[in-house]
Length: 452
Image (cartoon, rainbow, N blue to C red; front, side, top):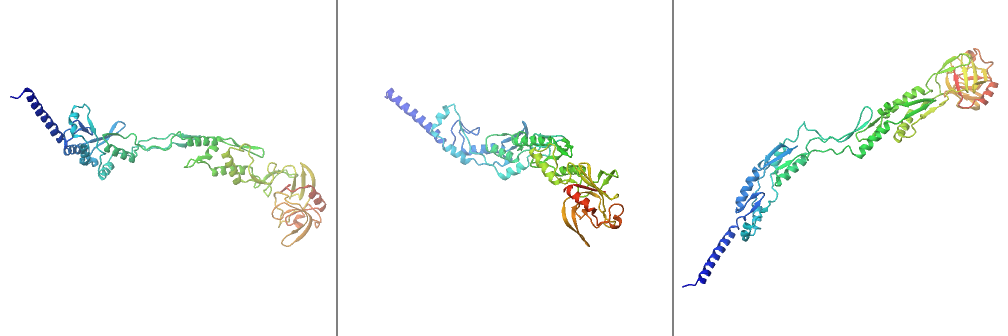
């Protein structure tokens, strides 16, 4: 009869063999199944084969619903099938299964911790996705396009208009975000961060600088002092000259500047205007324009003014660029007066008659031209030449560009009266030799000569 001890040993051995058998048998089943408490992508795959899990995952992802929102509201939704998710997860699942320790199944059961596994990124059919994406409600005429901050010219100044954020989608960013969501475990995506955005904002230092500079230029004080007359460029006029081009370069409208300076030239230039002249015998007479006088150099002054506006220099009481004679004084108090009607000439020096004489001017066929001229040269012992004459004179003072001047004429029998009708000159002012010598000595180059 066996002893109790032997019986106990036998029973224990049998029990051990049973436990070992159960343990081993269970472990062998986990060669083809996943261990207990195994999760993958939030799916419990415990005790399931790769084949079973693959089918469930395919079904899950194809039917998985993704929701895209805008402003917290659903904009559209789609399933995995819509975007062509057709993955076979067998390879990834097999790799995960093969990496598990099948003999640790009891420990896995006893542990409270769940083993979470993760698949590699989900793939999709690109052609299917492209067709799906093209049909999304992402483009609409009602959506507001973004606008950069920009400088606007109002009625009175330049303002910096803030940027417009808009709500037009950046389709490339939306597409990339959808793909990222599909490839991850997420199912919701907010599109609020995927709008097209301005590239220039109201705090842009360069825009601020340009705005301030444009306003500064348009508020400059600019004036001209022309022959003791002050002309101030109004703020309204100056503002109309200033603008910005498409690249925000500050522009000064040279056509408008030219128009303004032409107005001043018309108002003040004397070279092309008739003059009211207080004559010795005839009172106030009109003297037509000749070569005497000055005029604006409009183009030169445009360039100068535009440059000075940009540098904000030389803007007060400007003297315009000009050419000619008599700027600032015009006729003045020293001049030669030739009265064709009275055939008489005076030389005024500092407002007092310094010399006067009868003269002989041009005959009717070659009359002495009336006008405002000036002595532009003084030549002793000159020879005057014309088409049919060559005449030596002792004193020659030309007053225009066509050969008319004042000179001595020892061939004239007398002076004054109506002699010019019969023995008149070719246009010059014939002067008695003795008087001409005196005039030549006291009348300098530049002296105005008024002929009327």
